[in-house]
Image 1 (cartoon, rainbow, N blue to C red):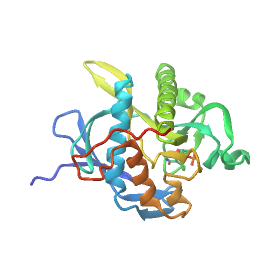
Image 2: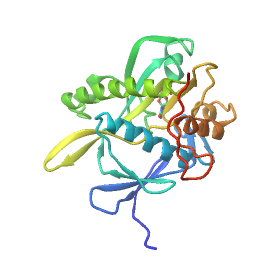
Image 3: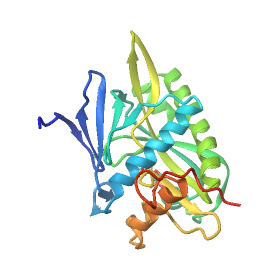
Image 4: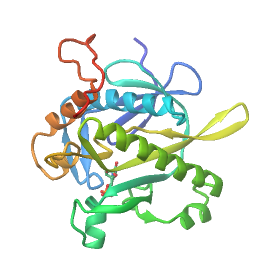
Length: 254
Ligand code: TMP
């Protein structure tokens, strides 16, 4: 079988040329890194689960009118997406203090924020994704002011929707990271949600126990990493327990 041309290899995904112009295949690996590649490992089955979770969340977001790059899942580890020019900014939305924010301000993890906070990082492994402001983004031309307004508005809508979705399955969306891209369509450019949304890019805590069900289990050597990813998929109703055709809807918590 002819091998597709590889476009890019990242830490958790490989991008291949898609079957038609303007499309890309995202292949989800089991590789996991943390602290900008200083910690490396494998989370068995992560690629398969993240492919499913990201498909599910992007589809649900598409249903409420958020434009995304997602086209369709192709197989266990691959999904077809529209080719976009990635805006070199990571958008982090926080609802509860955790991770780098807890460290930066000497705050206790788990403190509820008075309102959701949007942060930006410049996407650069060499520079360790430094925290930036909107001023840097527009002054350095990483995004135009109007694009940035759209990115922030979309991020807050995504946050509202995902908070509700996860709460319905007994999970708190503590924080998460989004990436956006420019999609060219008949001479027009628009901003769409890109990359992935998965337990690699979100912090998800059980509402009752505060148990961490995300990549922090890997970052902090908490054990039960594979099980945590599986549990998120199971609660979303996308981890079939009795065969691949058995796909129940999300489990609703009372
Ligand atoms: P942080 O607390 O380490 O800044 O992470 C905030 C959120 O962003 C957390 O849900 C994990 C996610 N994240 C990524 O997806 N990629 C990254 O490179 C980093 C640093 C964080």
